[in-house]
Image (cartoon, rainbow, N blue to C red; front, top):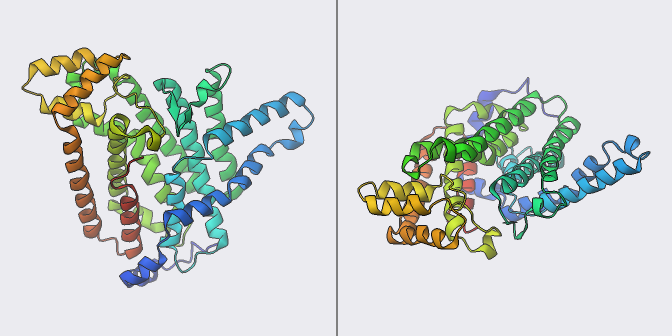
Amino acid sequence: MHDYKNLDKSKYIKSISNYRHEDLLNLTMNSTSSLSILNSYYDTIVEDLVTNYSSETSKNIYLEKVLSHFKTVLNYNISDGKKLRGTTVIDTVRIISSESVDELLLKQAAILGWCIELMQGAFLVADDLMDHSLTRRGKTCWYLKVKEKESAVNDSFYLYSCTFILLKKYFPTNIKLFHLFNEIFQRTVIGQGLDLETPSYLPSVDLYTEEHYYTIVTWKTAYYTIVLPIFCGILITPLSFLVDHSELKSIAIDIGIYFQVQDDYLDCYGDINRTGKIGTDIQERKCSWLIVQAMKLLKDNNIKRKILRDNYGYDDENKVQCVKNIYEELNLKEIYQQYEEKTYENLIKRINQANFNSKQLEQLLKQILDSIHARNK
């Protein structure tokens, strides 16, 4: 275990600020190797979870059946996907703690990565049910696989509860991690609530604004997608004090917002063979980046605004196509490309100007940004 109390912070800051760029590149871990490390601990965490109450459940055939069901829930909902959040924890540890990284630290990073993937799985199971989605990661949504779709709610509860089983086993004294997961889970639930209630709070798409949109995605996506994995990784290294840097959370949140804007674009224009998901934002009347941009561009065009009002939010192919036709007329694909490049450039500039006194932290943020830039899934 690392000795946090006796850490000389000034010495670490000075030493990490003197790394050459070439050294940092050698330390950086590519996504494939991070994914390989994460996946190598999948069987471990599943075994931990399904045997957690084995001494009690082995005496009851029905409890054993329920646990067998939950093992299927795990395998179906968290074993695949991009695993961006899980691998980011490992990347963070490899870069921030480059000289002191060892097998134990990588295992801890992988376990935390799976904790976040379990949380992600819980959100996706519930989100697909609430949004009436059909596919996820190229497969039928979980709630459509079970006998009673409402039981998927309990399955999502199980997935989230697994997070704390693993935290208790592997990080029993790290209170900061427990608090971090609690805070970000609740922030995400609040963001999801705002997303779901927006059609009732704002009964007309005329009321959809960028301010409201960015509030939703900050709470719903940015915290648990980018802030959580970075903070988890840093908190198990000797440089845990880096989480207190004033600019780190702000930049991480903005990378998370950028990620969600990409998701909104891919919901409409993504190739299902790559995204694995049939988009439903238009049908569900989501306050998405595309509709917000369209309403802003049409502020002086009452005729087309009315077309959007009359067709947005209906599960009807003709109405959905009417909305997409206006998106095409407004060249939203090109506007999105411009947004993507401008946002990327601005974030790189902010990272360079943040004065982290840590080349590793700069490298980490740039690597995360590069990993999602211009993505198509």
